[in-house]
Amino acid sequence: MLPSEVKKLAQYLWDNKITIANAIKNMEVVERNIVGRFYYYVYLEIRESLKVNLFKEHRALIEEGKGVNLHCILPETLKAISSLIRNQNRELSLKFKIAADSLRDLRKLRNDCDYKTNIFIDDVACQIAANKVLDILPIVVEIPNLDRNIPGKSIEKAIEICQEFKKEKQR
Image (tube, rainbow, N blue to C red):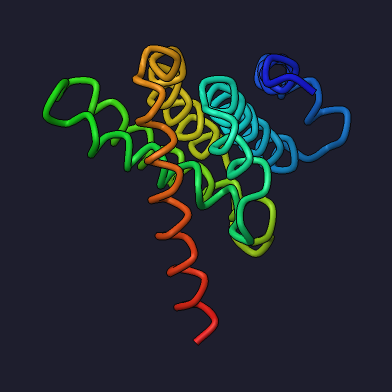
């Protein structure tokens, strides 16, 4: 499955949400699904862009995850890239930091939509999700332009951070 296919579904749901909601008599279900598709669209875009632009040993880290959830690794990788390029390009560094924060926020919103059925999700949540996507997309095109060592080092750092998160959660 390609990220563009998930994007098409997210866009279709967004464009036709009233018709779909009327058919199933539940707007909230449609809006929860829109948020989820937005998240998976950008998640897959970032993952695939990183995989294509990595050396073989670092590509394996993304594919295996080293026992750590890739949903944790990707935003931490973007944050680490931001730190590594800060001195060379402050503007691009800020874009990567914003994308990291937005991906983390969008994942939390997606988790709320999928698992917290006791909270109400509405059009505001969909708009927030759409705005987060717009915050994230500019860095996807920048990943191929990075020195190939930067994403690899960033993934290594991200895995270490996520392994620490995992240990803390288990305590």
